[in-house]
Image (cartoon, rainbow, N blue to C red; front, top):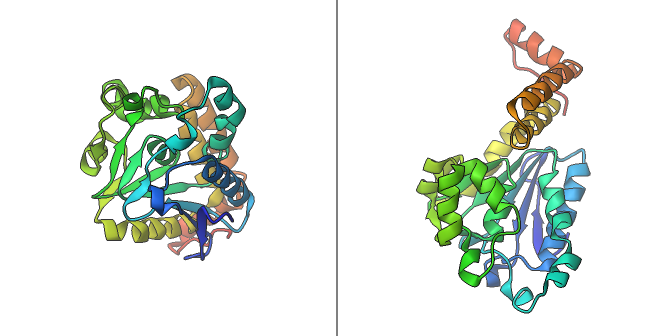
Length: 257
């Protein structure tokens, strides 16, 4: 694992905690960190011992966005060669639940990174924003699409056009984050939630995640068809029999680990 990302000792069985590790620049995303993130997600997604990923930053910043030193003189051909789509891809394609634990700044690419998660837990110090317009560009990591789906057209437009960040409570009110917590409780709560998810059936979790993501990309009729197929697929899992039998027997279910 790159020193730019700390894969901390597994706090619970089945949980991987990834922590961005460029504190001197508020975890700004340079190319090396982007490659490290992509590789970490590829490896952990393929690791059968990992069932849930928690992505965290530091106490002052989750991630302050792109490292402008790598962009100030960049040309369109430079950006084409960097293939950022391939670096975001493994994060977006992760089949396992991803929880972002956000404290401090989540700006630009850092906000877009958090938006790739399935659940965002925010500390009271968290600030989400897309300030690209203030340096003469626009978001390029999915913010115009994912923010619009999370906040609606007008909420997204306000964030994107003005470039001004919003605080944790406003993000909660808009539906961007799942919960707001005291800063010192964010990481622990994210890990506890991840542990809770490891006790649930992995196949059902994967099918639910795929179906929800499909809702963001297809019309309702296609999404409903996808859900019906996923629902039927769930009946092929041994977890279906165990879960239903346990409920009927009034005992805790013991899903496959």
